[in-house]
Length: 391
Image 1 (tube, one colour):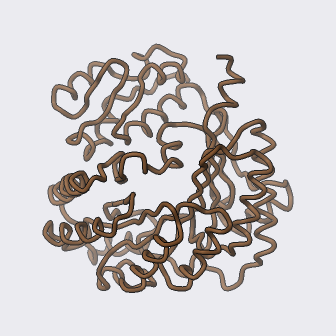
Image 2 (cartoon, rainbow, N blue to C red):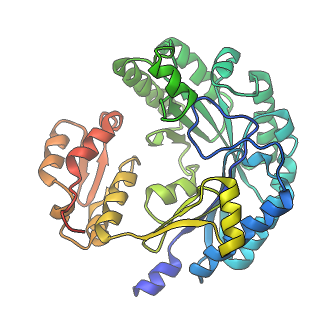
Image 3 (cartoon, rainbow, N blue to C red):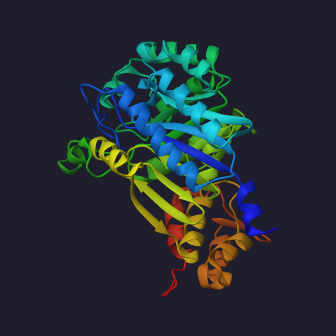
């Protein structure tokens, strides 16, 4: 198939970043900001301008998924969501059955907008519940309590066809028994997808300051590994096996948008701080909302960096992303992306050694991490990925 035809028919996703939150959570290092006032019309116009720029660079494609992330995109006026979706469909067109996801905080104020967001075209919601006990929610700096969160979940399940929610585990002092109880309760709500993240200390966050000062202690690596194993065993028994390091779904209910990332396919990113990967080019928007708005007014787009990726960079990124998936990667595709012999990109002796240790499994061109390998994936990647001296 000619490259131009392959490009036009390949999946394309769109990421829209809404950078505003009611408050900043102490664990969060995402590009989120608190502002007393937001000029909603100015933001709608600017996002549409950024969208039009990406569509001009990627003509002839159709969108398979759209993801509104943040920040807190459930704070967006539904009319803004509707306007962006209408413009995206006009510019690109939608593939049948397009997945349109919006991240939402489970507050009663935002849940009241769910019906309007669904009417605007959102068909999947991802709720940031984060925990199922009030003490932990206060520790995590969340604005909702359990009752409010579960009420929002109930509303979401009545409005959207597809629902996911997030939980954070491996928290200070968390026992295996406590997490088992909380996770079992979460699975009983019947959603098709769960995102289950271990608490990590991210630079620049309040938790990072507390950790450095000795005011915060996380579970030791052995306990964290036990919690990870328990999570995978429990979700698998419930019919939501892990399809990625931290994501669990009923078969067929995986996040199609995130699969675009992990399978290293094209996606456009608009809004402050948004990243994109399109046709071998990495894009990054300006992070600070005011700087992004100024760039839109000046240039018609919010791009700060636009870098053509060398073939070896693309191949290595595809390995780093793809091995997060239970399905793993196609080594033949990695060699094609890298435009080099596979042995220049991957240490096959290391693969063989790690396979004998039960950490990797290879079946023809496919390579995947095992359940035992997933907790130490970063170490595995450090052993198998080769970085050529010249790209």
